[in-house]
Image 1 (cartoon, rainbow, N blue to C red):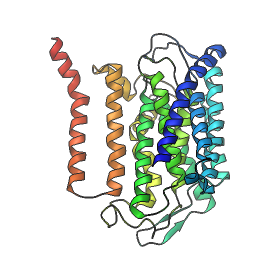
Image 2 (image 1 turned 135 degrees about the vertical axis):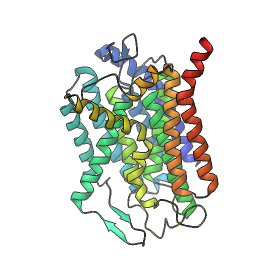
Image 3 (image 1 turned 30 degrees about the horizontal axis):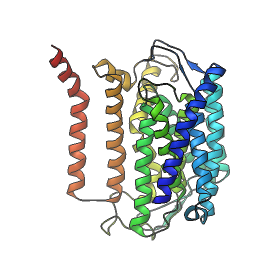
Image 4 (image 1 turned 180 degrees about the vertical axis):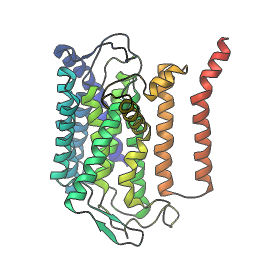
Length: 373
């Protein structure tokens, strides 16, 4: 655990320091978010937060190479290096978009190219263990299609939710922490090697998000831009993909109480990116349906995202962000805990969390209006 905490601190510290540099680069290149009708900021803000976060991830990776705990597992460092390379590629695509405003198809091509790097170097779904202990091995086409779908969907989900100061970075940070808890708890409970690519990537990603949030909290001094949102989506999804096929059924056969968990752990690398990012993914699906029904491109921007609706019902920017963080945390940690543990205490806690989060979402604006009346 100490090694992972060190990587978290390194990623966070380096990202925090590099954010100042990234801001100056963005100003010199003219990569600035202009004020548009659908935006909530009222003055131009520079982009390129992704450059700082990429630097934080790279620093954590370099430190990980020097830690015996992780260095002994060469495949861990190999897979993490592949993800970092793919992340650098998608970050470059995002930088070009921040500066030149690329069209949607060009950005999609960059996302597919970065995903192809992961697949080419075997960071992809390999096999899944069935309930009876047998394995379902994916053929190359199935593996590539499933990996590509999960990675590209996650990239765009993070991109869609990046609409308020600190929102995307906070949601991804919560997801990364939840997934790290899952990875570390899964290996601890089953007594297997705690050095995994998934744990390394997720804890470094969480650190990078925290380091960036210091500058991105409202009022933000820097936006992550597409260079950041696409980088976060790729690394988060790739960390889940990297866990697939790493452990056999007999290694991950029990939950915390010595019995099978509610969800088969070896299937969660598919479902966790979806559950962790259910809020932005729901926003993405609703946006596509809404725009398509209106006869517009699914990539056409509007001001009807979930965070916009929270502002409309009376929440401030900061409160709206905190509420979306709360929903993300409830779903992400609820999924992780339900996959590892069982019992009435778990479902009671999740029920209470759901009631509290719902009350905050819809009750605070009414309470605020009644106090001002």
